[in-house]
Image 1 (tube, rainbow, N blue to C red):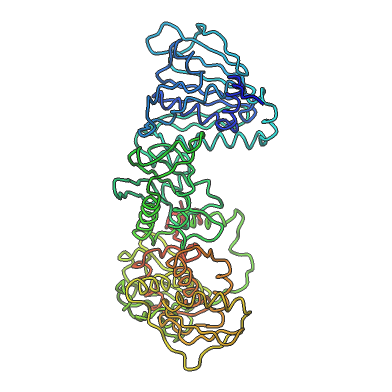
Image 2: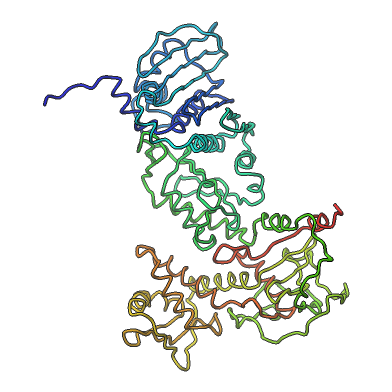
Length: 603
């Protein structure tokens, strides 16, 4: 069989299969062209999820008749000359328009500022018309109708109109975040109009437009640099999370990307703060020499390849973790909003209710506690040993605490403890509201951070059991546990094999105090079965520390004295990441006085 040159139309259709996978792909290419043309306003109109109509109109530099003729030919571009090592524009391959024109009905109308008239060219299934004059404003309008009419087989692989319209919306959101100085308007009969007003250089304002106003209140600024690679953006507090990764946005030199390396680095940075199945909200922007990154990995240009991927990964993980550590005591503001929404209209305080368990706060300490582990009621040791077990008589709900005996709440972000509710929640008064603390979740985080710190410094001390705890387990679980015995020993947990189907626990971390060794070992055995065998030792140690912290924390139902509650609050204020437990749940919820007043109709 002889070798033949393929027709130009078939070549374009083959290329279209790589560049234009769905209407959203076409929208992305056309929006990128508009941005590269210097547009400050871009309007996108769709119908039928972009399959029936996709129109992108901009006020950019426009094109003349000669440029129009070249624009619809493959590999014709104004953005690069001879090298792919210095790409500073979004587009550069010169494939978008000819690819679209080979599978759809394409019409491009453009006018340069100062020209007396606009010009239009049409491409229908690869057949090109002559360039002719047309009325139009300055800029360019690209209209795509009946996408894939020339390749009907591709239509079978498209999703519903709603799904395709949603994919286009996501493209517009990513472009809008990357370029806050441009106004984006997305409209059409298949959707509600979306209008992102230009925000100049205020990136956070644009992020609030796209991600919601809540993001502004729950975002931590990022600004880091390592070996001439810069990272800026915002990371959401861990308790401000979502059910999928669609709210994670990454940009490389201004280009929106969906790179696995970056997404995995975000996941690793939040590994011990976000629960399984939940995803943090983050917007990251990397800036580096174009020669250090390859954006020509795939025709869609959504994947990139870094010359030093380890450096990029380390920069992202380090910057995010430093930001979370810097402001880690913050909890999501949405917790209070969810609590407020739980109070439905029609609620009556006179409905018969089952009597609540008595509050345990009787008096408050006469002076504020120092934010250190040596505060009254809080020992140097962690775990349950951090608190004495002396119980306190319950206070009557109508008893008044003299004002002069209350600590000065304005000195502490988390306020001063006023009561313990159901032996589970600590109620603290702040200067302008109140805080409700989940005592187990909060203490679990404190123990976890103490374990990590001791591991990084000298290693946690261990306490030898007078009688080793023998735990019967399936033989395969024993095998898995012994594979990680060295990691456990680094955490102060000493285990040995005791026959084919048992494990002997000889030492436990001192910081945990009294711990249920049987429950701890059984849970570790279950979790090890889910571990990634390729994970690093440090990652495994963090995982072990998290599990140990959960078993070594004060439990719900434990009655605390006022000085113990205040000591816990002070330790939270001094501990990074105390706004959420190791599983990503919030450790406290704050209600402002204005919120409380609204509940009673006083605001």
